[in-house]
Image 1: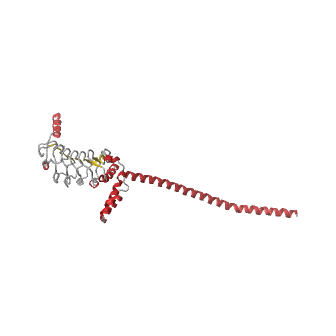
Image 2: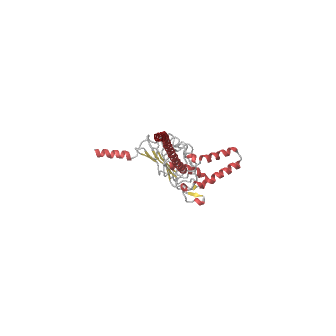
Image 3: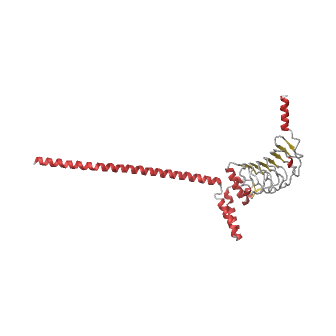
Length: 306
């Protein structure tokens, strides 16, 4: 009987739940709903998801577009897999209700922009294998919890449009995050190189272009953003800034130690000289009394002879 009960418990975990499951998906009692590989061109009726569903797999389908309310009222979802579809755009507010989403997989789609990712803050995000040429830093700065980012196999154009995102990537790596290879396809002299290893000095011309464009516009309102950009990205590398601070701290520490040592030496020297002067003053009256006694003895000898 115990073996039979164990088998029943195992089957209850592994076999799909028959009730409250959106067709043609398979729903499991452990909170996994598998809708992958079903040839879906639109989302299944997700309002039929069992309570407590935390993993939703929609990979390997034919999804080309998603409605803005496609994932409404699905706050329990923690993992969403939309890989290997035909998505080329993500509508604004698509992930707004996925407040507990920590893992999002979008690799092998046709995405060209990712400006609508700011509705949530995942820990794991895959955008590999899309048609991304560049990324906006502003779309990733709100993702404070992001630790793992996959960006490989995209036609990256390593020009000024990717410069700001490179700065954000350096900050993510400095915080202990992980980013895979971001290989450049353009310009030609950077083709095949990982932008993470491209020196930031190669993007200095971008500031010159901003100055030229700002000056050519003739409007005073266009000059302020360029000034803000220059102020924001100095120093241009977080690692370089930290290294500069460390070196400056070491130098200042050495100088302070030398100054303290010099002050201590001066205090000791002054104390010794003061002590020497006091002893010298004490000896001078004794020396005077000895000379007076000698003169008295000489006078007494002369008078006795006389």
